Length: 209
Picture 1 (tube, one colour):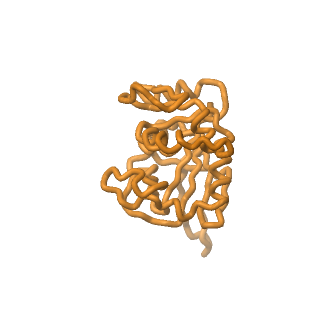
Picture 2 (cartoon, rainbow, N blue to C red):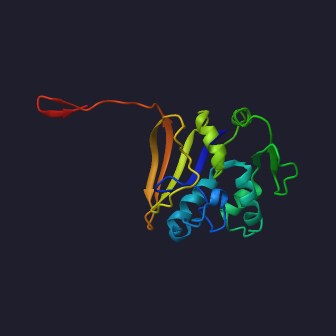
Picture 3 (cartoon, rainbow, N blue to C red):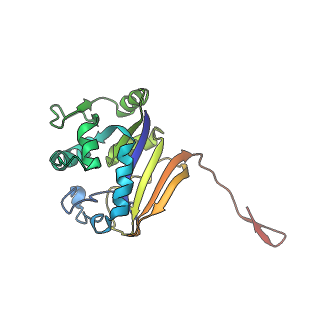
């Protein structure tokens, strides 16, 4: 399977608590719900498009606990996000979850990098990570992510959980899709590429690189 990561980010790189004021207040975060004012039809179309490609869902324990109480109650068959989350196989990386209540959920304990490597070897479409900050960071550091799908919202919140941290490995990216929603949210789909560097110089009175 192909591993894809789907994340909502602020302009200053925070991915914590996008969908609700009390969604994730860990670390004293009190600026949750920053996504909601920008959730228009364009945004909905992008997210819906993600789930049409999903073969299975991969979550960290915290995101699983946040998603389950809400999405397991959404029974509208016309809601493709709810249908995907409720009906597709779900894998949760956790050493503490022993009795998952959400249907079609399998708990994977042990080494998350090894567990995900094994999942990727299975035939099928996309294994999609949604949210799951700690897990996404680990998979980024291990070089296991095949595509990053990022929605960047025109808002800053200061401190909070970030996908790309100061100790993350350097990487280049190739943009394979992009658009801007009517509310000003920038969408980019990126595949990892070689990290490259260079210098600017002046040659015969002209800038060159």
